[in-house]
Structure formats: C-alpha cells, structure tokens
Length: 182
Image (cartoon, rainbow, N blue to C red):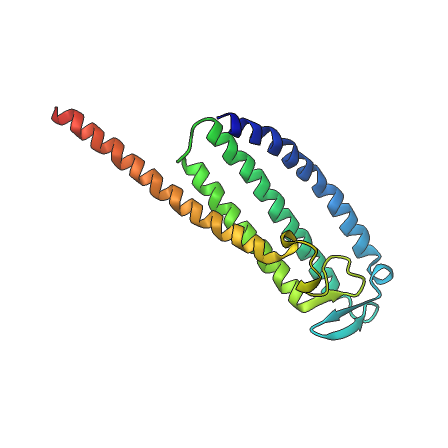
C-alpha cells in the first residue's frame, strides 16, 4: 500500500490545483469572449473563412464547449482521487469505485466528442485553442483520441469491477452456506 499512498500524495495537490484553476480559466475565457473580435479577427468554419465581426456565434459556442471539455477532465481527476481514497480504505470493489470509474469514462468520452467536433469543424486562425490539423499536434496527449481511449478503458474497468463485486458477494454467500452445512 506504499504505492497507493505515494500516488495519493501526488494526486491530491494536482486535484486541488486543477480545482483552483477552474475560476482562473473561467476568467480568461470571459475576457476572451468579451474581446473576441480583437483577439480572433477571423476563423475557419467547415473550410470557409469568416470575419469575427460578421459572425462570431461559432467562436462563443466553441469556446464555451472547450471550457466544458476541460472541466470534464478536471472532474475526472477529482474522481480518480476519490478512487484512490477508497483503495486506501481497502474498498476495492465498492459501489462508489464502480460509479467513479463509470463517470470518469463517460466524462472523458464527452470531452473527446466535444474536442473532436470542434477540431473537425472550426479552426481559429491564431491557433488560440486548437492546432490546424492532427499533423500539427506536438505530442500524443494533445490528440483527443487518447482521451477517448482512456474514457472507454474506464468504462470497461467499471464493468470489470462490477463483475468482481458480484463474484465477491457470491463467494461470501457460498462461504456462509458452507458454514451452515458444517
């Protein structure tokens, strides 16, 4: 259990740092949306270049969706921290652990869907949020497909833990029946 304690020590400040980062990120997004015409004078939507002064609604929508996507990933870190706490208490196959894994999976899949839709439809000319295409991605963790893979993995993991919980309960029942037989 030393490893779980080390992981807890590492994750706990990261989670709080991310949670404290949400208002700051919200402030930056608010400032961007207030000054969107100066910061991003034009953008590309489905291959057509638009001037922000003429049609800025897609920028507002995509910026808010990006904010929601980042919040979803931050909430996943919070759930991960809760899973670690459950593991420290030796609640391995607890209902909360299964629920946290499932929520993490769905939130990461939601984050992927948001980023994928935005990356495939809109391109900020100044590359404020996204790169022009996947070839301009600097590392593999900037690719939204990695988020999808982790999301699906956590959904599968929640199913595996659910099966493990049922088997554990069946073993307890079988043990109690054997004790009564003796």
